[in-house]
Image (tube, rainbow, N blue to C red):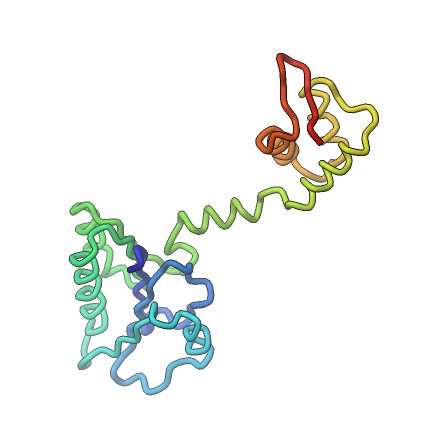
Length: 198
């Protein structure tokens, strides 16, 4: 059972890239009774989700009919799985009082206007991964140190080498490269002197 659930108001948000849904999230797509055709691109994106996706065609018509269906399924999900993190993808601010009420009851729930805002922790994690130092830079650092005949004897010297070898990287990334050497026990520090195990 997935702990993250995305409820999509397809009447209100016609463009949603289901290919961007996190692998551990379940999706419910709500569409109207009179909506005879679903966008082909959406259906193609939905296929890899398999059993994690439900198409929910609303019963009946009328003002807010689809919204009431979403509210029902949102409540049902949180009743069955109180720890679930739910996101309603809709530009309809009419959901906001319900979301505030659910927050007051201790549930994790939000209304979002775009998929990237649905699961902010996931977005932050992806941004961090994108900003992380690529593994090839680390491998290059190890290779350069193996070839270096005048290895630094202090950490500051090692950091200076990383700075000179990777000038296009920010100082935080350069320090991250050096720290990884220590984390992977290729370099050890005894007092202030460095020992290399390359």
